[in-house]
View 1 (tube, rainbow, N blue to C red):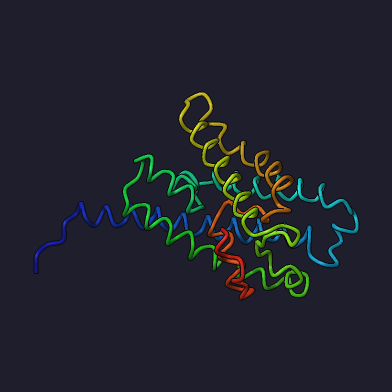
View 2 (tube, one colour):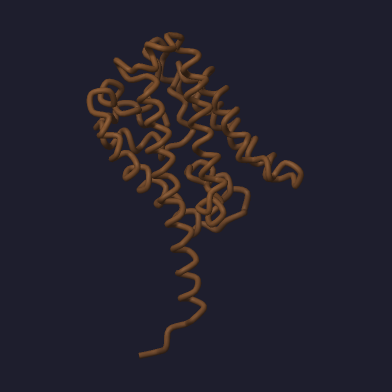
Length: 220
C-alpha cells in the first residue's frame, strides 16, 4: 500500500478541528440563546410576570443572545474556527473570497448539525418550552409573510455588513464580539415582531426540528 501523505493527514486534522469547533459553538449558541428566549417568553414564565413589557424583554433577550455569541467568539472555540456559528456569515466569507468552497461547505454542515444537537436540551424546558414551540422563529401573526422576509433580510444584511466593517479595520477588529450584544438587542427589539429575528438559518433549523414546526422555516 502507498504511504499516506503527511500533508494530507495534517490538512484533514486541521479541517476536522475547525468543523468540530463550529459544531460545538453552534450547539452552545442554540442551547443557551434559545433557552433565554424560552425563559423570557414562554407561557407562565416568571420573567414575564416580573417584566410585563414585551419590548423590555425583547431588549434583554437580544442582548443576552448576542452576549452568548460574543462569549463563544472570545472562547478557545472561537479562536480555532473564527466562530462563524451561522451559515450566513460563512456564505459572506465565501463570497468575499476569504475561505474556499470546501471549507465553507464543511462549516455550514457542522453549523446545521450543531444547531439540531444543541436544541435537544431545550426539551427539558417541558411545557414552558412547548408553549412557544421551543423557540421556533415564526412570522408575526399581524404581518404578511413577505414583510417577515423583508425584515429578516434587513436584519441579516445589517449583521453581515457590520461584521465585515469591523473585521476589515484593524482598529475595530478586536471589538467585533462586543458589537453583538448591542446589535442583537436593537434588532430583536425592532424586528422580532415581524419575523422573530433569526438572522441565522441554523438557529431556526434546530427548534423547527424538535418542535416539528416547518410552516414558516422557508422565511429564514
